[in-house]
Image 1: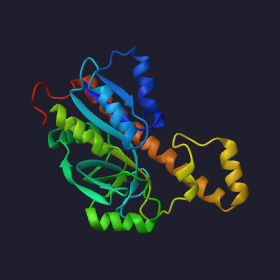
Image 2 (image 1 turned 135 degrees about the vertical axis):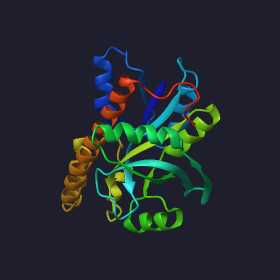
Image 3 (image 1 turned 90 degrees about the horizontal axis):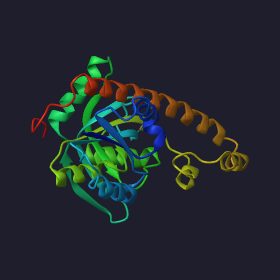
Image 4 (image 1 turned 90 degrees about the vertical axis):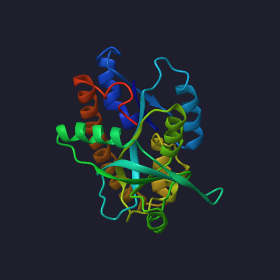
Length: 246
């Protein structure tokens, strides 16, 4: 069974609604891990106990852009996943995503008229907030986008001996510096009172938040369209059977 993992509920809300409408009959499932490595690790342990077991893992969600050529809502299919930890000041050896699963995903997207760049991505244990941090990460790793959970899941797939893929929609491009307030807010969405208090202290923040909200809507629409294409491909015939994917 293809298992699609998102960090936040809104990243796959459209797909989850379609699966509910089908009464759970679709040959895939959605798991929401929560943001960050620790929550992803806990979700990975739970996933290992589920029946039927995952036959392939696809991480899906939004990401920060590292390559200046990427715009909000651009889609990236990962070829390799790098890892960096600010706390430990360390980097881990990159792990390749499944090329065969990547080919299948790209074919499913292309059949629906959805474009995606295939490139390397970076998992970082902290949000890269500034354009300067993003530029440094791009130069050091060669990755085009950054998120926080893929490295946990590609290791889980490696341990389980199943294919892994990553599909990410760019939320904030490389040139964007995120407001520092975001680091203290609930990633699933801050309360209106929290936002109002922050804007009262810094009125210029309102313009930035409106721009980010537009970018989030665009990224979510792109991701939803891509996941719908993947669901359609699964229903039409599904992933290659047996050990065809690695």
